[in-house]
Image 1: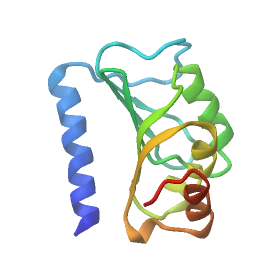
Image 2: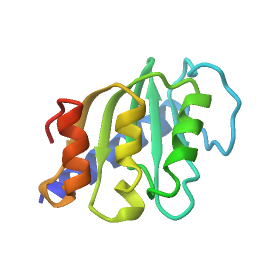
Image 3: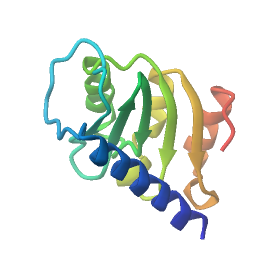
Image 4: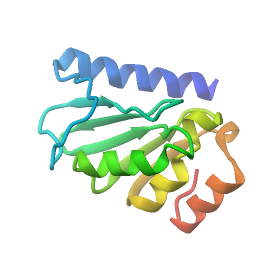
Length: 135
C-alpha cells in the first residue's frame, strides 16, 4: 500500500511538471547551473532508472541506477549543476533502482530521504546512518 502511494506521488509530480510545460527529456547537457523552470531529467544510468526533478531551485532524485553506473551518475548530476538534493526517493529494492544510491548519498548533501521498509539494505542503511538520515 505504501509503495502504491509513493508511486502515485511520483506520477502526480511528473504530471504537474507536464501541465506546467516544463518537461525536458535530457540526454547529455553541459549546463553549469540548474534551470529556472520546472524540469525533469531522465538520466541514462545504463540498466535501471533515475529521474531528477528540478522545481524552483529544489532538486528531487528518484532512484539511482546500479552500483556500476554510480560514478557516471554522480558526474552527470554535478555537470547539471546539482550541489545538493532536497529529497531522494528510493522506490523499491531492485539493484537497478537503488544500487547507486550509496554513491549519491556520499557525493551530495541530502535534506530528506524517502523509502519503504522493503527498500532497505545493509549498505544503504549504513550510508543513511553515516549521513544521519533516517528512512
